[in-house]
Image 1 (cartoon, rainbow, N blue to C red):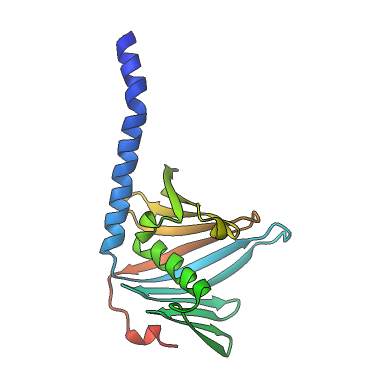
Image 2: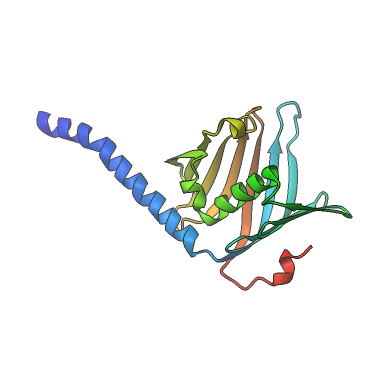
Length: 200
């Protein structure tokens, strides 16, 4: 009995690591299989000096390898469109265009957003990934290790469903202590998405 308990204690960390490695592999595999996404989202912004949460709603589209539209529709209109290295920001009636290849800030924004969606964030050296779980989700915490990025974002949590390994929620934790939670709803995967969606 004594030897059995000792073996159990020694093996438990290895078994836990093995289970976590298997879950992470399943999440990566599922992410690679996603070619397109269309979804509704609700964004909740928690700011330390404001008592009320700031809630926004909108639509999200993604098409592999590098096209995305993130559109806020309520309570205001704001859209970010990524089409290759071309980034378009539409604020009400004003439109601004940026080149991710020549603009370091927007290039980094593009990289972070795309990597969260397509599963490449697991291989991003700017983050260290650890896995945990609650009753509803597997949660992958990406701790920022890049010093310049850590001044703004301390970590990013991605929430994946336990049945299909589908990302349903993103939590971005800022260095200031504020956080933003984005929850995706009505997700449609690998369905045709019109090219017009990714045009301004």
